[in-house]
Image (cartoon, rainbow, N blue to C red):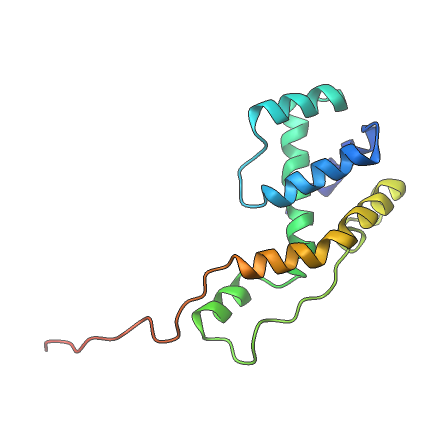
Length: 148
């Protein structure tokens, strides 16, 4: 698990809109390795931090966004569902806010702001992630007779 306190550098942002743009970027880049080089440079400049701090913030933010979007449903449970080996339909998601994922010692005002930003976007994000996944056909894997 990444150091979630690294997300605290967003408290240095000048506006709620800037923080929202970063959070939306984190959702869009949830499967990427990091911000693009121009975006990383912009974040370093605006937040007055080093590249390494932006990279740590990216890892922490991506973790928080993924936990909120997937609602605590593990990768293995999602994979079992798509392979057809999980009975009972898609694993239940819980509505998780960033405040449920972040440590209690995290910056309180930033935690509230992240909740306000993510909560209205969460249903759309969850729908997009469910719609964009590839499901495995239940009979896609066939066994062939062995020549013994």
